[in-house]
Length: 218
Image (cartoon, helix red, strand yellow):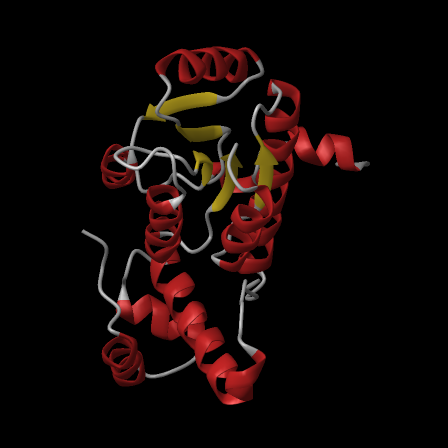
């Protein structure tokens, strides 16, 4: 029995669906190698990507990835947050349940605001220590496994950023789309299973697929 929060952090998830695997997206080979080795020593299985396209290729190769450490300053625009924020949005579109920890050494306030707005789980300022990254990953893994437990109980935890000026209707549509994305991703875009979990007819799921332009990630 798990008796305290520290045990829960290290306890394996039921059913083997969760694993201590992380994708590190960092364009500096020396820093990437150092962090990869240090995290491996702490029990993480680390894979590395040096830019946005490499990261998306990693996703295609292993769709179970759900923990990501992402440096926002990626080539070909390493001096800006453009590529990192683009990858953040693309990744969460493909895998809404992912937990992405962003790193940046640039405009801290602007980066934090935009990263959180787009769904980042946590935010660390470079140079971030291995200990702080490891702690953030433990928190992210704990949230991920807890959300799996909620899913098993028929519940979903959504992250939603809504503009107040757009009113409740737009916010409701955003929540609706996110719930569909999360359920479809969790079922491998099996429409019949998604319909069963959502308690609706398959025809209604197809309606929402068309409404929000949802497609299976390539």
